[in-house]
Amino acid sequence: MTRYCVDLDRHELIAAWGTGEGELSTRIAALPAGSGTSLLLGLARALTQLSDAAWRTYTHPASAAGSLEPNSEGWRREHERKRFSEVVDAITQPHLPSGGTVIVSYSHILESAHRVGRALHRLDVPQLVKAVLAEAAAELAAVESAELGDMSGRAQQAVLLSREDASPAQVAAADHFLQVDPFGPTELFSVIDPTAAAVAAAHWLAAAAEVAAASSGQDRTRVVLEADDIEALPHATPTLVLELIDDGASPRDAVTGLVRHAMHIADGVLPDPAALREQLDDLEETVAEYTGDDEPDLTDVALRLTPLDPSRPARDLLEDLLTGIYGCWLLHSEYAGFGEAPASEDAEEWGDKQEEQHQTRSRERFAQLVREAPARDHDRLI
Image (cartoon, rainbow, N blue to C red):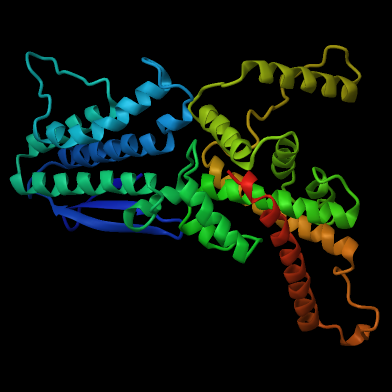
């Protein structure tokens, strides 16, 4: 989301947002001289809340809710998204206090817009109203662009957000980048929605696992775990994704399910209490085996509710999946004979430069083998 702040030295309203490569900021308007800092901060805070509410319609789309029946979660999300068209009216004609009370909208977007309007009403500067209306329009347009898979301009901030669903256009774009570089080019983190990028990465991880399994003789769901014996890797999440795909889930379902679960945890919601009960039972059995107690004390034992970082689940998953592809290469090179210098080479002449060239050739061979598998199973990408 875009964050708004007050530059006290220049007396200006500033907007700032992330891009995946760093932070950008822009001047929105000059602020009225003599206005109290509290009033100015109130406007900045209300605009930040409006941005947060607007981007939540992107990260929590109605399409990911399952049902659009009246009063369902999907129905509420759909109606909240439709509030975009009412934002201008709410800013220009806000609900004002009357008789010691004020009307509060049930819609987070509209209520945030009314708060912006009330802050502007207190400042009473027509030029500032025009600038804020233009800014609000630009922010809503950025959300709409991101929904369409266009991450240019201010919509680029979407690459830092986790979304419960994945745009087919963004998945296709991520797949193209991985076709060029199966190990994951930097563009996946700067111009692609991370959930969509993770869907494509899961597809390519499955292909890489097939290659590693064929060369090592290991089960394809265990190749990243085996690679952890060669080099320490975050193997749990890639292994889980491989198991889900092996059980019949599509890369899209595997990824969006994990991301959605972590987002619910971040929102303070436990989406699957029955699964948690099973985790607790398994944990108790494990601790009992370790301690020898029939009823072990779990007071100081922690249990992860999600394998992902709840504050950034999609990007965390994407990073782990790309690391999983790297792990598949490690295992493949170990068994395919690419991990060591050829026997004919003089060990004394095998320096850093030769090692680097050797590793590059090994990665290129592996990448080509991996490219052949997604071409056969491309229909499973979505």
